[in-house]
Amino acid sequence: MLLAQLFGILFLVNAFTIGGGYVMLPLLHDFFVTKYHWLTNQEFLDAVAIGQISPGPLTTMNAFIGFKVAGLAGAAAAAIGSYLPSLLIATFVTKHYLAFKDSRVVAAVFNGIKPVVVGMLAAVALQLGGTSAASLPALAIVAGSFLLMFFTAVDPTFVILGAGIAGAFLF
Amino acid sequence: MVEGRKPPSLRQLFLLFLKMGALAFGGVYSMLTFFQRELVEKRRWLDHDAFAEGVAIGQITPGPPIVNTGIYIGYRLKGLRGALATTAGQVLPGLLMVILLAYGYAQWKTIPLLTAVLKGVGAAVVGLLASMVVKMGRTQTRTAAAAAFAVAGFLLLHFLKVNPIVLILLAGTAGWFLYGRA
Image 1 (cartoon, rainbow over the protein chains, first blue to last red):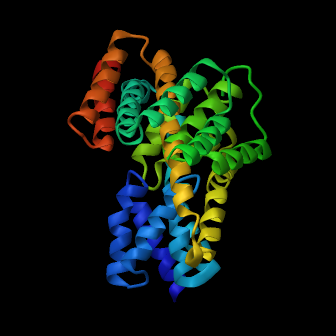
Image 2 (tube, rainbow over the protein chains, first blue to last red):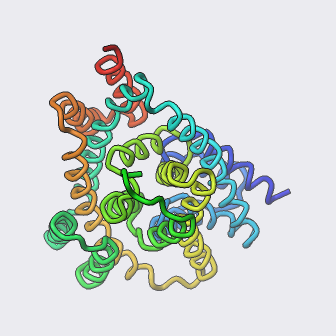
């Protein structure tokens, strides 16, 4: 039963990987290309590209895989399989976190974690900057979007749209 | 919830996440910046502490981190139905676009243009993210110890490429030693 298989594979991959889209790619490739031959290598690469150009999480690419394998029903089975583990596990963790967050131990643990998250995000910004800000026009977009977001209350929507339009002309 | 703020309705929560899901081109970090701007700064449904907790919980739970962070936010504001609303809202637009692209898959001709557009967006996301980091830094590093934690997180990830999950676990352990045993 193809739909159940699709659902099952994506449920398992999402339930057992921590870290998101890119961490899952080798596993997905192994299942869909190597083991079941449902996709060619090129189709898999296209799925990744489509996931990247669409808004939202990369995992929306799983719907593309589902669609290639079993049409619209396949896309639906893939999407549900991808997000159900999160709905179960993250909800469970959040519920218990909120119940215990005022306890001294949990509060202390998160007092350590919160500033580290900021440091990690700074490292990510720097790393993304290294690949995205490779030319002078790109650097100008980085600087412009930083200044707009930092000093004005502009909606990020307009920054993203503006940068997309600029990209169409510049790159 | 920030003190004294009325919680959003389920419908408001869903529509906001739908909007962010449709507009956050450029990957997960673009979406994260939207969360910070819309939920913390504009609507003040969350403060920076709750937001940072949500980011951390998103990272250490299985599945896509940004979806997990959305679930944390939805659950915190509106319980289980809130978690469903934020998940559906943030993934539906992307799913729709992916399926449309799958239909037109054979005759893509617009991809080079789209690639150029996304190069611009990618550069903007760096600026958005940097601005978010500076703003979060101001609320999360008020003590010398917290600042040292942030710097350590940056250095360990940037130079030593320590696995982010390991890093969060280390930070939690260090926090427990430092703050938990008074």
